[in-house]
Length: 113
Image (cartoon, rainbow, N blue to C red):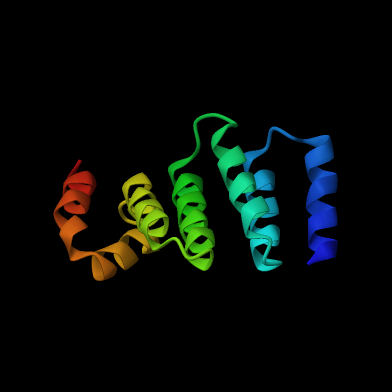
């Protein structure tokens, strides 16, 4: 918990522009139950610029987890859909297909692209 956060903060001190470091910080905060800080860290990843689709899908998935733990199912569902749209062939997209069949058509269109 604290050790992981200290290590990632050291990495961010030397390379603050690396989106994966910011994302890892969010994961450490999420694991520690510091949900508001985790959400801010995941949102800061977006502020670094255009993201690789895989990282964007993972970021959205992790935001969904954080919002769900805060009791906001509507935000969580929105971020799950965003994760699926960012990378339609990802495991997160498959999970959305199972949980929300209404989005299957949209995802199939994205995959066919």
